[in-house]
Image 1 (cartoon, rainbow, N blue to C red):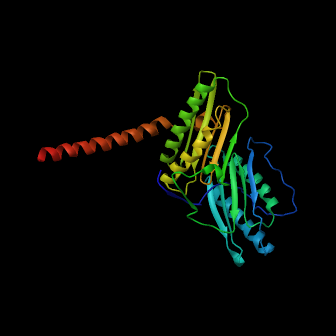
Image 2: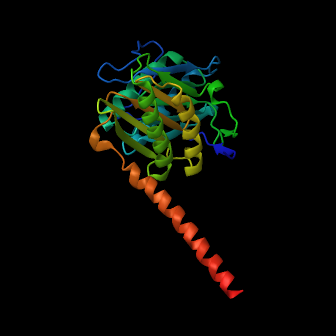
Length: 294
């Protein structure tokens, strides 16, 4: 895999009301009406020297994210007043409805209240994540071919403790499913693919792969390839999730999206094969023609 620029135009969500951050308010770490789970919560060790400006810019940034995400599943926003900049990103998973997206964003923002005056903070849930930072870098980093993503603080993996008895067949089917999704998602217009497969007639597996919309197709593919490797290590667990900055993958034996929300992965992958065959035929045609002219 070639080196790619993994731009930090990244993740998450939405809320329809103005969000005001107050350090004194109590928070709830997890939604009560959703299955979303808090995967990671982090705050900077350094605080702003200008609390009033920092909180004002943070509120403005979150409100802007709210407005943008009412029409999409991810957004970026910023406020730069009085030299106390706050950049923010928000990302909801593609299977969420707008109300569920808003709920998850709301809980993530509540979680970030614990960061107080920290220069940056991130709250990553299974269904969404919200991040803010004082510094924004468009070309966030480069992913080398031999990059060890497991040591990166931005990489999160969550595996269930429950495993299935028919491990070999289950593991093989899930690996095939994840491979198909990581190849199909970058080829869709919204960088999102969801699929369902049955294992031995008794177990159903639901899985998705998706990327942030502000990255290239190549970066999406490379990112999914990296996180899928760590996700496969969850098997034969009945649930696994892996995310890194601008991409996300998840599988489970219990439904977390509807059957009417699936992607025609076969057609997408067959289209890829068809395009490849067309290129081969095109090349062979001109090779034979050039040979006959000689």
